[in-house]
Length: 122
Image 1 (cartoon, rainbow, N blue to C red):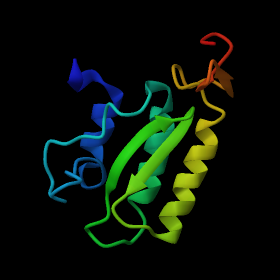
Image 2: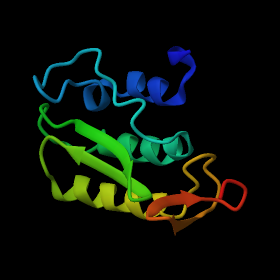
Image 3: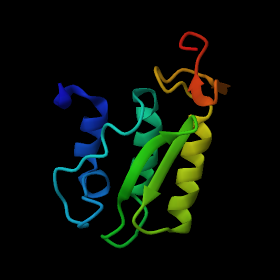
Image 4: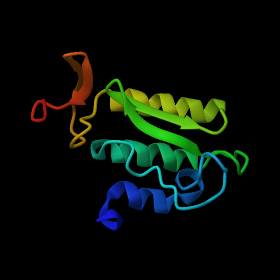
């Protein structure tokens, strides 16, 4: 059920950063809640909670958060030095965190498919 998904709960906690329609820029029912693996929820929560403390204009929000080539990707409506640093920090953490369970992991490649997985999920 969507209401029980930790990604959805996080989106509801930070609606001004995670519930904005990237096309219109308006608040709405557009959560970025299912575009990243469950194992990275803590990384995203850390990123978003720190981002919420940065004094930036209201129109700054995450347009996309996802996994690509085995690591986290986070895109925003505008680029700010402090926010870019937080995103890089989150990307670095994702390369060492299992995308399935959140345990310590390593980035690996199998048949041209990249994933960050712990030994249990490899």
